[in-house]
Length: 469
Ligand SMILES: Cc1cc2nc3c(=O)[nH]c(=O)nc-3n(C[C@H](O)[C@H](O)[C@H](O)COP(=O)(O)OP(=O)(O)OC[C@H]3O[C@@H](n4cnc5c(N)ncnc54)[C@H](O)[C@@H]3O)c2cc1C
Image (cartoon, rainbow, N blue to C red; front, side, top):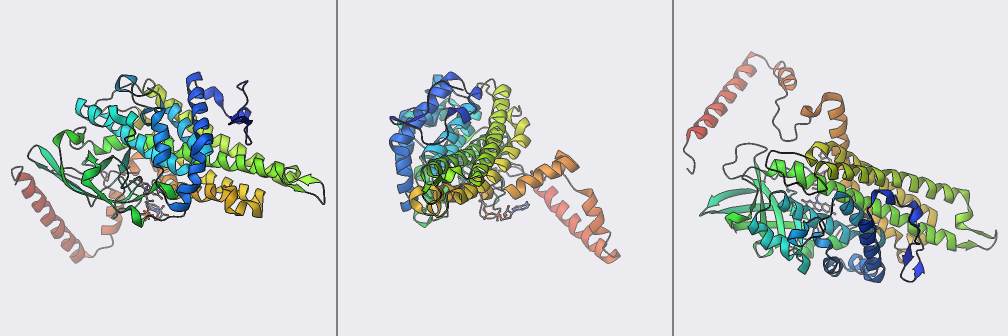
């Protein structure tokens, strides 16, 4: 437990003190970074959150404040102008921004760091000079993956594609949701590969803002209203240097970078929202008095039970998240390893990343609801800001991978093995085929066989065609 008191400006902090923060997971430097973030939140970011939510305004000002202190390059090596920090620092940063400041800003930050790390998985001099070194000046990136045709199966961009043209690529991307759409400086997008050969043959590109069209004026949602997660369209040339990794690297990039960074960051945002709601409930229930019985709301055992359970569940969730972040740090030498295509480190912990997101997103919905109950009608009113935490937290369950999908992944993998998940659509389920064909009469079997033979001949003929035709 740090011997310093948590402060809010010049005053003691009105929520939970450091004695309820698991500071043994943070280095001294990470604790200093957290103090800087709390100060930024107190000075300006928290006040801005209300305006962003009321007016559906993009949280640019808050991202500028983060840029000034180097947080937009938190995980970038120091030699490229970053803070050289690791996965635990990233979890702490996302949690702190969401808790004390602004959840919309925190989610834009998650997508920004996701884009930065997708690039840093396969760094080149060109990509570093163009996108990574300028991060200190406030350049913002984001991830544009979700596809209108595949919904929350965001890892499969069926409506998108790319062709090789004159040393570059003609990229077509249709994204149904992209945080920071219309405001980011660069978009990391995933498409099916040029010369597409099958479900997992995907490629990753960086697209500049000038080459992407968004419609931010159409964005309106229950929560995270600042983060502008609208649609995005790309249909044009991208220079050859702006492919990230080799053609066909998309599935590896997903498993090794995009998913682990997103799941650590977003879980931390949900944990931060839960903590922020408990902070508000502490402030309110310890100040509100019922004169008839001479008790504060916090004096009722029912309210104490609400807060006790909320904090125990939330600390279980955040320690789970920090623990998986530590595992990723260990696997990557504190985020310093540069992996060659085919090598894995974070991907070996993907099934742990799924679990932390499920727990954090489930917890935030419960905790924000209970803290609203603890604060009574006062919590229902907008001026206490608790209702914004509740609305923002609602995005947790539905953001892909959704909690329905995650519990399916985990349950199926536990019971039937990892291969049964087949999210890259590569394993044939013989059991299903046999079961279904068994139902056909001889004529039906013959018709199916003829159809399959025709398809096989067509596929073989196209394989025999020289490339480029
Ligand atoms: C605030 C916010 C910000 C976002 N930002 C981004 C971003 O920056 N970049 C990006 O790429 N995407 C982003 N997304 C998109 C997100 O990741 C999902 O793709 C999106 O929420 C899916 O919505 P949908 O209506 O298509 O869901 P659907 O996929 O249609 O889901 C509908 C229901 O079906 C369930 N379901 C779907 N598949 C299965 C299955 N296999 N088994 C069981 N149930 C299933 C779902 O869980 C859900 O209950 C964002 C979403 C939100 C809410």
